[in-house]
Amino acid sequence: MAIDFYDALQVDFNCKALKQNFDKKFFENLYTEARRISQTAIAPISHAYYSSILVFENKDKFFVHAGSNIDPLKKENLKIAKFRNCAEKQASLSALETDRLENKQLKILFLFRLDDKIKELNSQKLLPCKDCFDKYIVDLKKNNGVLVLISEEMTANNFLTEASKIQEIRFEEEFRLIFFKGDNLSKLHLEEKLGASVNA
Image (tube, rainbow, N blue to C red; front, side, top):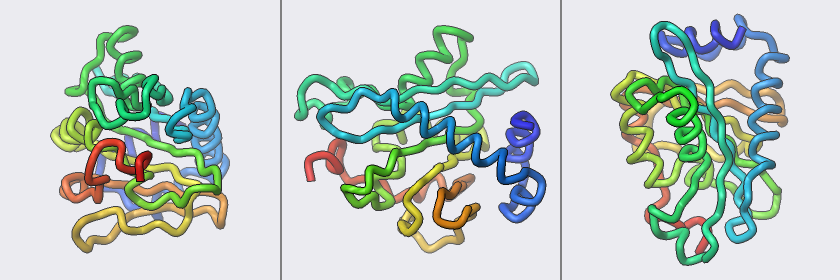
């Protein structure tokens, strides 16, 4: 069923059809797995627990790699790209080392942030950081790929810098999936500076 879902995201999809074609249990399993991976993060400084699941396509087969973030040893290094070990980077390194997969084969990027209910999770804290945008989202757009946020935060909606309809699937007050594709990937309302969400 996962392969069918990946295939569905590669074409012009709509969320109503996705919700009809894939039952709630499928989406719950995806959410549960993203949440589980986020809990393996090492985040004593940022207290931000992310997971990323990258889906690559190579020779008509899908390859899935996941990772969670690892904080640098010093808080000030969260502002410096070379010291950051974001969840996307960990998943990407796994793909490269295990299957020799690179960004040109990246088709879907799932991103989840554990909601500890302590700090308000606005859209900027749910989206990729500026460094990950440059390293992964730019290529994802070139590949006609899809960014999918899996979120426990149910009210944030300022995800884009320009007014545009956002596709999402909601499951009551449990979790939601928010989809970005095409031009919307260039309009993401990212944090202004690296580490801004931690140092604010």
